[in-house]
Length: 243
Length: 116
Image (cartoon, rainbow over all chains, first blue to last red):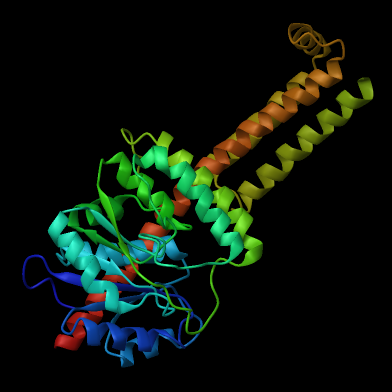
């Protein structure tokens, strides 16, 4: 992968863990929708053939030495994109749930509004999307909690289909939540007074593999994320721990 | 009460011995043994000083000195565990940053090799 050759250049980031069944199709779809746009797959130490599949589909692959979890995997991609000078990064999950045909819409909002983050939202402008009941309860709770914190409603806070600009990349290279990062990332941005927008999208069923959030983990997920949100609000950034 | 204090003294000595043995075998680094040895020493001193224990119990408004000792044991180990949590968190942060850096350097090396 080359350095960003021109200003305002976009990179597509695909975090993947054991997605050998879906990742190659996702890359091809992205290439069809956004020809010539660099695609980086961050392979979170998959135990299957994800690395080879992604490579053979024409993507660059950042291979983590061991499993870091979604947050560490996405942050690694953000770090590389930032170092290579990219202006925008749009994250598309490697399981095929995010339809790449919405990438231009996300990019358009990022460029035209100058917002720092754009979220592909299943529930924005009531586009008739449904999700499992447990997850729906979780999303309802998160919306309720996030509304006063963010100062505006967020319809789909758990969506991983997001685009960020370079200012956000800079923040995320230094501070990015490790587990279930989507919601906490919004709070991290709010602390910087960054703006986000939502774009209506339709999600698809995952093509292969299993979700990282199973029914059993849902309760843990809700408690963990709520705690993470409050900790992020209270976080004192004046004195960072030494690295 | 005497028996409880004796048990506590033996346990403190045992803890010291285990920690010192672990340091000797390089299972625990010296800097992390200090909290454990300090905690064990405080427990040993208190269990051998009933007068001090009575005083602490009266200050805490407790009529039962052994209960004061148990509360102290709990507090001391809470501090040790908290300190270890801070250390583990620091290590995890450093570890993740290092893994990401290794991956990025490896990626850039590979890119360079492909160019040549």
